[in-house]
Amino acid sequence: MDREKLINEIQSKQTFLCIGLDSDINKIPTHLLELDDPIFEFNKAIIDATKDLCIAYKINTAFYESNGIKGWNSMQKTLDYIPHDIFTIADAKRGDIGNTSKMYAKAFFENLNFDSITVNPYMGSDSVKPFLSFDDKWVILLGLTSNVGSKDFQHLKFEDKSLYKHVFEKSSKWGNENNLMYVVGATNPEFLEEIRKIIPNHFLLVPGVGAQGGSLKDVVENGMNKECGLIVNSSRSIIYAGSELDFAIKSREAASSLQQQMASYLY
Image (cartoon, rainbow, N blue to C red):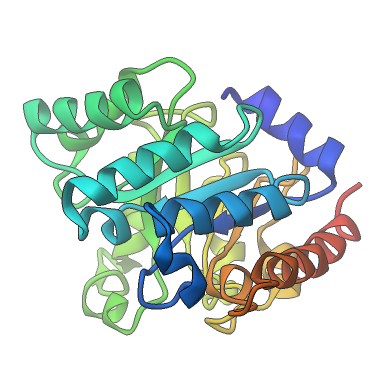
């Protein structure tokens, strides 16, 4: 999916919501466990209930890889079921030296056919550029995360500037606003304004709104640009909004609440 189509989807649906399909076999409604592929059936119901309210689905691959080949099959079936006009994100956090990254890119962009993949920038440009060689595919680089351990490295000062700022400045030259996005945690909204000065036009994938306590209002006020420029992810607070037979209805209600808030910020 190219940038123009993504922006058009945001405007036409009046939302910049991404729903994270971090589907855990231990958390889905128990009545689904009787089915041949409980994870896929859960995802299918969530997608059916929310596909008109979001512009992206993010699949955290760890929840699928942990189940071996059965999990990979569930992930592929889920990906195939997502409507083609909805942006798909492989939250896989890959990144390695050239040839290995090339194979990771082939796996997620050619074989699985995701629109985008999250990538760790720690090993530098040659670990990221193989992902950037695919047309109409996106790298979503880890820019500034909000986990407790982020302070171990990301906020260390180097040449009087936090390391994460160096990451944004240097990596923005590896690609461009048409193939490179960044992950910025919603629980760090005070940093978004500074980040926007470095990368004013790139899309930001912002996790952490909802169960992790991030504020949509703070994210919008500090991170939105003239084209929106935001993809805000919510996972647990939507997909686990209900645990009974009506779980999909509860998920739709939670997604609808966020979509309505987002619509009020779009112009």
